[in-house]
Amino acid sequence: MTSDEPDPRTLERSDFPEIQRVSTRWSDNDMYGHLNNAVYYELFDSVLNAWLIRETGIDETVSEAMGVVAESSCRFYSELAYPQPIDVGVRVERVGTKSVTFAFGLFAEGSDAIAAHGLWAQVYVDRDGRHTVALPTVVRDVVERTAAAQPVRRVAN
View 1 (tube, rainbow, N blue to C red):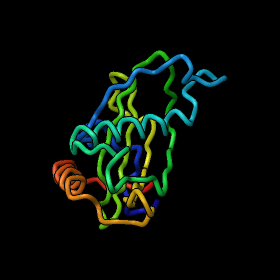
View 2 (view 1 turned 30 degrees about the vertical axis):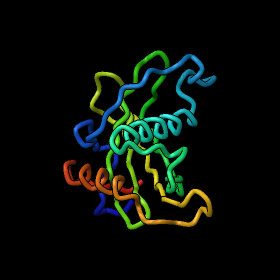
View 3 (view 1 turned 90 degrees about the vertical axis):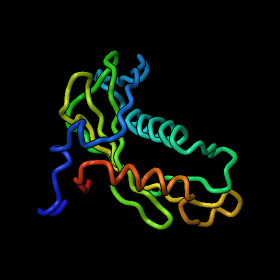
View 4 (view 1 turned 120 degrees about the vertical axis):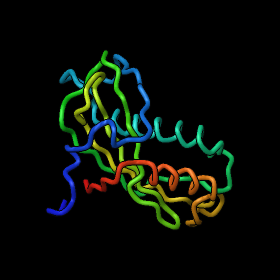
């Protein structure tokens, strides 16, 4: 992070145009009594795909183009644990020709303070050859509409 980029810890719920509440499970906790790190990535994946499926109608299990994760990261700021529900926010950080970078914010129920911040670069490839392709038009429409409607706060992880 450079000095001219906002600190992700300053992001709040209102910076994420899509918020989905998820229930945690007993098995999500690790031996230290908080969510295992891998669970954060499962939440990112599940919430992002549910949102994209709902907004685009695309079934990536059969579509010609599919989004694959090329890079991901997560910063942890405060503990989350079962049995508390978690709100997962999604925002669009960058829209490219063949990729989209999404940011995620995880929030404890009733809190506006970000507990974890994730970044997720998703590249679109054709199903058969796995060569990069342009963003499907319907995906581009959704992510550009979302980016235009959200508060302007670009952050680096």
